[in-house]
Image 1: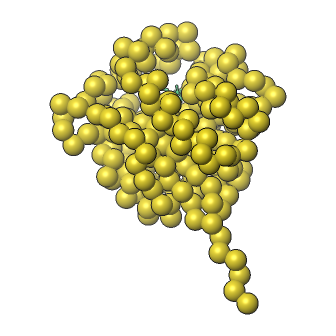
Image 2: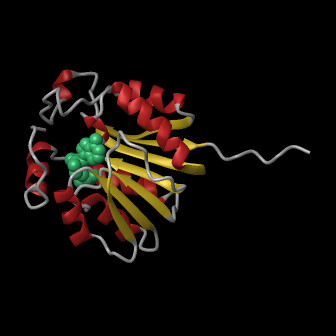
Length: 202
Ligand SMILES: C[S@@+](CC[C@H](N)C(=O)[O-])C[C@H]1O[C@@H](n2cnc3c(N)ncnc32)[C@H](O)[C@@H]1O
């Protein structure tokens, strides 16, 4: 994806051109979220709210807090999401996350903007804002093992995806039990579950 200022009005056209499997990526993420039945959701890099909107359609009673560093995209999200079941805030993935705790954290096509250390650090901080037994669902660009599977143009500056295997390792190091729910070429959805707290022993 090329380096430009995100614009909610042209966002879908850019997606259709650069990430043709975006609708499938969204569907796979929604399925991974619905099975966890969360009531409170944090969306990291909510953008213009299109993916959060699909989650809201599937889970109309859930509350979604979306954060993003782009005021323009947040303004787009405000048009799409039901204010009774969502809130939006300016925030960067590198900064302290809203404390929650949340039943579920989701992120679509935003984490690949962080470098490897940044991703590993973010995964550890996500684990801390999830309830015990909570779930993180990551839907993002990855570096596929076969270079001919790269579909989306990567500039290596703003876009710094990592191999899926490395991300799975970082999720494990953060205390999650990760599993790949779906992978196709340079896209993947990973489910990362946080352990339930063990009842105290007598
Ligand atoms: C490709 S869009 C994805 C938007 C949305 N999640 C979706 O599914 O359509 C990437 C979004 O991540 C945001 N973003 C990128 N880097 C970020 C960062 N470091 N902190 C917060 N938001 C970031 C951008 O502003 C943009 O809205």
